[in-house]
Image 1: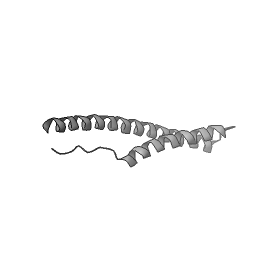
Image 2: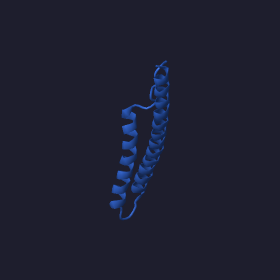
Image 3: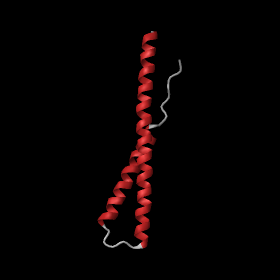
Image 4: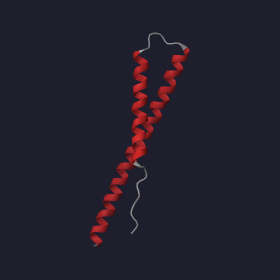
Length: 84
């Protein structure tokens, strides 16, 4: 029986979380320094919100995939233990 391989590497999982938290952090820095918004600052906020949205979607996907992979691996290990 072939061993199941995880869909996401540890590096990809860390990158997903880093992207999300970096976007939130940059957005908070921008809000802290915002007195009156000029056009270039509005562009900054749009870019950071896109980063946060992509980070949130990526983090959700990675978390779901890792949970599904854990279930599949656990089931496969149970089957292998029964076969022995």
